[in-house]
Image (tube, rainbow, N blue to C red; front, side, top):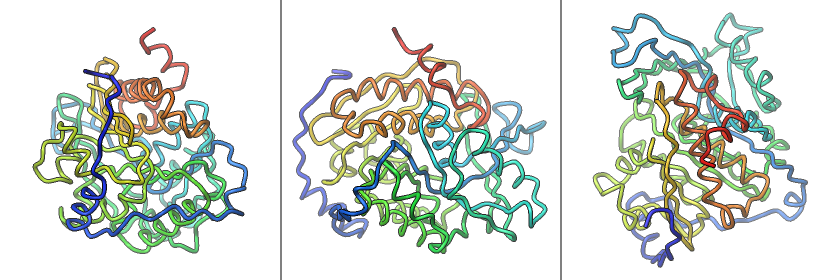
Length: 365
């Protein structure tokens, strides 16, 4: 029955064994929390790690990039979208990223990106500058239904060059939630910086939030993408994934079958697994229950950033009360669905991210 809590009987040890054999990512890391670091005051801060770039969205839908008459440029990048989304909702967010130092290199897109965090009340103290690499660009193809495909220009871009030595360790330690994707796992030195940041966050008692955000053209191969995405799967407390990404990761198994999702993608340390269903809402899985929450109906113009808006809605709620998923999960997810729904009504990701007031207006009474 849609939306009800259903007891889940998981054979986790067996599932763990199957997954480990397939993806070779080892046993789950037990949470080793440094007692001194864990005493740091947590004020609901969500620190987002990863890329910030420029999206070029065509002025019309249903045409190829070559056929588009023009493009609207908008700041984007999944971690940046989540950070701004949280701030728009009234939450506290920071961005750990590396982008072009427009003071040292003549990159007009660097000018644009430098101002986005400040304009949206996102803490940018963890951002680092590069005087050589250029800003990453993404050209988006909009299908007639508002969904999209991407073409990237980033070899290399500034976000790929973040090093461990550039991490703002104190900022990470202050976070209640540390959120990340998989794009920062593709290339060194950013991959090592990503893993180091996760380790700092884990030892500091942060909740680790993971949205793989599959962008297959950026990976060397499909198999490299699967292995890279799954390499940190067992370390996350909260994972958000789309039905399309499930199909890719488990290679042909039915992404709509709850048993398949639980067997293939649930792991013993996970607190919450979320599967987004586009306009149809989302499914959720915990150790104790599972269910689904319907979407909020709107007219879709551009789906770019919808998943990030959804994640921002979830994390903004959980940052203030990490155990909220045990008590009011359906309310949290309905709110997050509305965040995603409002985002698709405009072109571009960051420009379309909603305020809390706008979300509350479209929620069912």
